[in-house]
Image (tube, rainbow, N blue to C red; front, side):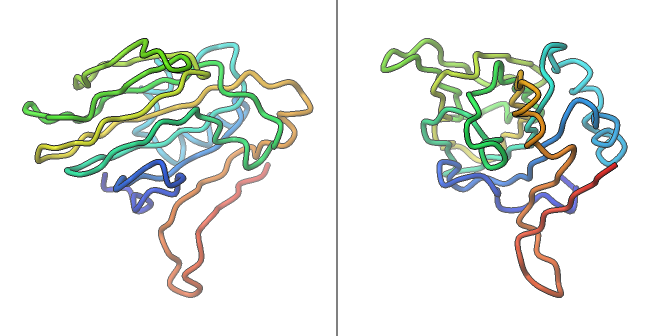
Length: 186
């Protein structure tokens, strides 16, 4: 949470009252992610699925009143318009108040609820990327922090459209106050 990029979330309007930043990257640039964000290394070593070759990683902080409305992840669509949902989504609960009220992850297949997960600190969850999911509003004090990684199995043409590594954040540059995106190319 001390990371300088941690600010009001850059994700879409479904992420109400949340904070975070995002990193899109190809497997070929996993070392770049770890070099720039060494505190993600243990999570990435544990969570990444070998068959996946593109990823969208974001820390996600919810506090009292925060929620995530129902959606299907497809965050790499801003780079490749025809992309399908991720093969898998992985969530690590980093910080969860002992007396958390709300903040449950709700999974749906169509209109049918297929899961409701109460966050537990240090637990790692994987779910199908094509499931609609949401996070119930947090109604208690404290913060709920998770690491979320959308994991994609892309063909070569799709992968070409995905940045090797890009940081997405709403942290403002003092000189231009524009949305910040940093690209690292090899």
